[in-house]
Image (cartoon, rainbow, N blue to C red; front, side, top):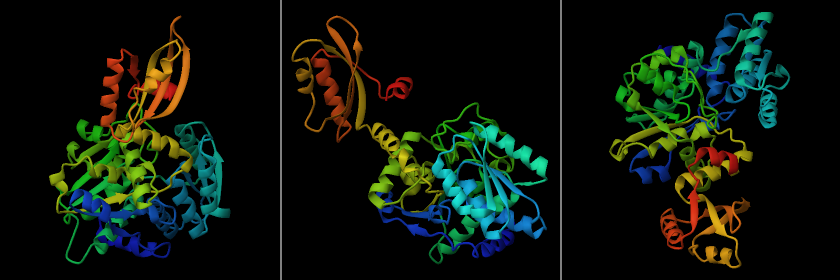
Length: 416
């Protein structure tokens, strides 16, 4: 990667927004015994780093005389918002294709960023259908497709994150370890390319949601793989196939350097950062911070750690689900199916089994399974995970028929 070109992109970007902060986080630093620096891409004008790649793509396309063509993108998330913001900045017209299922909040926000310079078209129930419609529109109108990650100008734009990090570190210091969230791979390809020679290959860790490990599986196979399915919860990083250019840039790294984080563990970090630090993060934006807990303590202790916080576009309508997932992962909430005797006093006897820190969060009679017994769905919250071991012992001692369904994915999705 040509550092001079990246620095030119960064300088041009200052007309759009100032550098995002690199903040030393005292709370995380104390926890891990290290200097934990957060690169706050959630504080960009569109609350994600995606504006960087979009800006650089447009800057070069306009310099090449493409101002009379229609720019097109397909996205229901951060790429669409960065695209729209840059369209308005350069006063060029763009079309954003989004699935029909896109939440209205995301549609409204994208429209607000682009104003009169963008048109939003809703097409298809799934992203693939939406993307196909965008490609057809490009072909029919001789438009310009602005890809989300698999493009050299996009990668170069994302590399400006690394240029800012080096400029913002205390004088004479550099990162010992850089943690990068991975979706399509544009951010990681750009940052690692720019930092090559400054941060050793061993000084990078990449993080993906456990339900969308496209980089890790591709590195294990030695070539780009398309995942048969992905968990879309971490929507900003739930990509079935990493970009070809991005994989080529990252193929020098080892599969062991990619850390997979369970989706529910990401929720724990989101809730913690909101409650403790007052920082609102989207699931993909919490990935790098959640990874700190998954790394060996000796890898972190006493070192300069930079975690790139990729985005903060969080829809608060999702908060109850995030909190639910976080509590279940932390072991302070469980769901049981109880086989309760159909007799007076049976419920009172059960309630007497609960401890002083146990609280019923859900109670639902499911159906009568036998003449003398009924099934109850019950959700219990407690303050400490170890309380459940004692509660289960009391269930067993009382001869209570029960089944813990907390980790049963099928039942949880259907019932909870």
